[in-house]
Image (cartoon, rainbow, N blue to C red; front, top):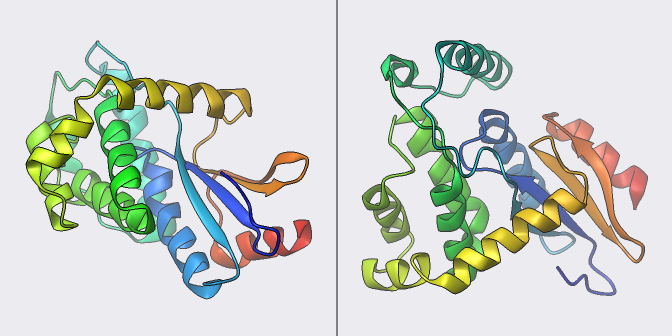
Length: 209
């Protein structure tokens, strides 16, 4: 999270199983491409029902389905709505967050691409990001072996680091995902809360620089 003296840095607070983040990651990827060499993008994960233990209720499934439809209408991204035929799905995001943290440690420059792949696997392909085999396959796409990934994924150190990251994000007051913070000499400054399009995000960034 260290910002250089010349290159501004933003912190993208996200979650691999957050539908609005699915839409917003494409926006952040485009921003990163447009500002390549002029902006650092740091991906951080927030606690979105990370340790849930109970299946989604019918009301929660309906609310989630409505949310997915809103995201699809706004972003035109594909969704596999067969997800909602599952009756006893436990929406726990900790394994996906831990996997993204592992890949950030192993392949830091590819973090946004890994996040995009995880979003697509869950929302478009209907894969379960709680399934370690699915996470291993995604890691393999980016050249990380199963043994290396699992050694890190199952380590106490990474689990503790993830808990620390959840605590740090909570300390910022980031309760909405996605959120974007600009790193300043005075700390992290919120510049976007929730989904917005690229032109709006870029304008907010320029206003705060």
